[in-house]
Length: 180
Ligand code: HEM
Ligand code: HEM
Image 1: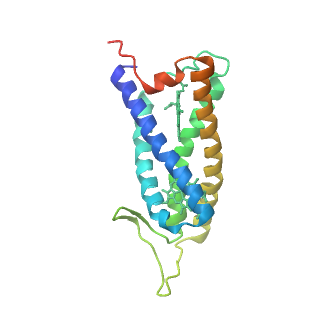
Image 2: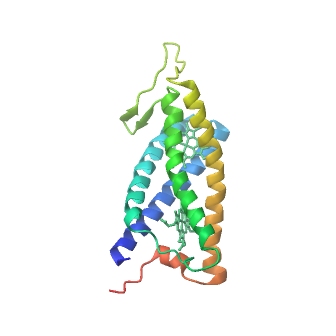
Image 3: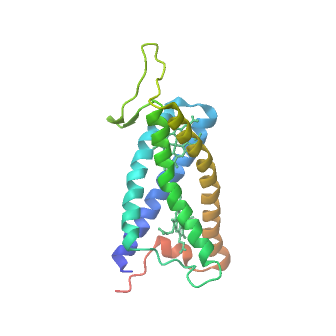
């Protein structure tokens, strides 16, 4: 893979990791503490993360990352893990949008209305489709915790490679060696 292409992969990996770790953390915090001040931020950054993930997948389609696990006995598992993480990166924002959107809560990205909210004059929310919203909520909840656990495993795997195996798995994802 060309140097510039690898750089794009790295930037997209770390940028989406930054957003998604923030979203997992803020999501768990607000769902546990009912801190409503965070909801609008979480939803807006969730939509931005979704756009970032779409760009990442589009780039990845033609430029798969040359995983350091290639040729090892655990190559398949690493591949499944990375595939799971990518699928979760798509399903989390989609389920969030379905949950908030169909639930009538609305989605607004810093002043741009993506999905209108629907409240009655008593300020009660009126769902567009309650069953759909409940399904989105359930997916967002269970997948959110599963993804959190697997991101932790992913991070520990990267740290193990770096500090115990002392190979370049993490360094390769951080810094390019310009061979040209
Ligand atoms: C990559 C994107 C996202 C990630 C990783 C993420 C992660 C999470 C997590 C882990 C939770 C706590 C578990 C739960 O109660 O559901 C949560 C809660 C929540 N998320 Fe997201 N989220 C993302 C995007 C979105 C989007 C785009 C929306 C809506 C437009 C959204 C709306 C919500 C809401 C309303 C809650 C609170 C649920 C409650 O009070 O029970 N999320 N999110
Ligand atoms: C929510 C956060 C994260 C997600 C969703 C994520 C996802 C992924 C995915 C899908 C890949 C495979 C490359 C690709 O196909 O694009 C990958 C590779 C990698 N990630 Fe992450 N990542 C996250 C956070 C992190 C963090 C915090 C670290 C470091 C501590 C890390 C270290 C690495 C490394 C070293 C690789 C290369 C693995 C290899 O060569 O096989 N990631 N990540």
